[in-house]
Length: 131
Image (cartoon, rainbow, N blue to C red; front, side, top):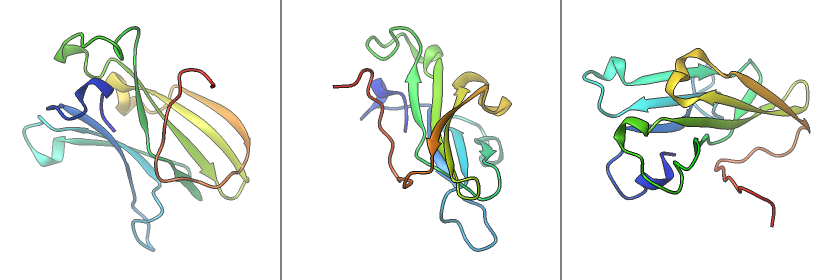
């Protein structure tokens, strides 16, 4: 996932799922921000690991203010929020975690209980208002 106005164009930041489990990389258990312009591979990615026994869905980038309608420039590319649904398989609950994209390494600043566990999905989508 990247800034919606960078689709098909050069982007500096992308957001994705990651996996680091003893049993393998799947299902995903972390949300990752990648700086494609970072000078070294070691400095490119910042990851947040979900609690044990959790699965994360594809993160979505939501631009701040009118940033999803008008390209405000490269300096605003990560000016917004990153959201992902975290599925807790032990508690049988889901929550929406919210990151400040520019301060991603600080971890989520908010989490909203979405209720009972529902089937997790690979891809995410964001709808500004219900149909």
